[in-house]
Amino acid sequence: MPVLTTQVKKDKSLHREDSETQQRGSNTTAKVLLQSVTKTYANGTPALLNANLEVKKGEFLFITGPSGSGKSTLLKLLYGQELPTQGEVIVDECNVGDLRGDRLSLLRRRIGIVFQDYKLITQRTVAENVTFVLQAQGYTRKEIQRRLEPTLKLVGLLSKADCFPDQLSGGEQQRVSIARAIVGTPPLLLADEPTGNLDPDNSWQVIQILQKLNSFGATVIVTTHDEQLVRRCNHPVVQVRNGRLSRK
Ligand SMILES: Nc1ncnc2c1ncn2[C@@H]1O[C@H](COP(=O)(O)OP(=O)(O)OP(=O)(O)O)[C@@H](O)[C@H]1O
Ligand SMILES: [Mg+2]
Image 1 (cartoon, rainbow, N blue to C red):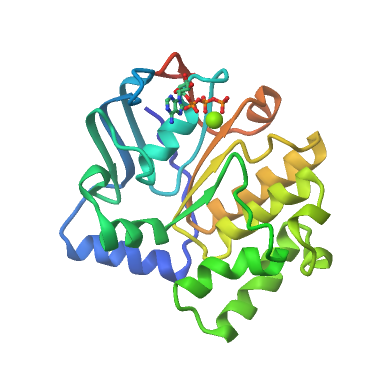
Image 2 (image 1 turned 90 degrees about the vertical axis):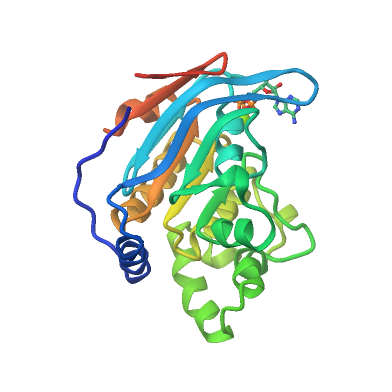
């Protein structure tokens, strides 16, 4: 399974994470582990079949595959939106399937998610959509302001901070969802088709943003249909076909 050996620079929060891991006496560098995971939805639809995957800390991994092959399901298992039917899903050494309530919320705080369908709040501005989660997590107003501007700048939306989602193009809405996912500098970023609605130039910009976060130490997992984009980057690729994973 994919192993990325590039040495990455780490920000303070990631150093903290590493020292916590060391204190627990662990010697693993896996950020994400899927062990013999099968997911069958309640209506009987099979989505993943005996999937095994290891993603190491600091790795940038692409997941490709046709529509309906199980890519989003895989990401949903990682942040606990879906539970595996069989097998174990481990993130930061926690069995996600065992987490409930506060413990699941705590894990999710450490995961940035770019949803395939954006999930923007229509009655809130771009700035409010991006900072909403930080507010809910108790960040101070000053810290939120400190993070907002560079994040909007990074995704090219500084001039749209006061617009509402329905005043934006599809690609701009997609970039708001990316800003929201990265504003808290999460150690794990899951991006589900983050370039699905973008032209090649904008797609490349988005990948560069994700790569930048990765260069600061974040583990990044990106699903995409865009074979050209995948070829342009030198990152490991896992393919999903009919719920089965294989290394490309
Ligand atoms: N909530 C659900 N209930 C039942 N079946 C589901 C559910 N969500 C997804 N599926 C089915 O599970 C399979 C995998 O879906 P998934 O969304 O993971 O595919 P995907 O690879 O992300 O596709 P796309 O590229 O179109 O986003 C599909 O057959 C889909 O119809
Ligand atoms: Mg999907």
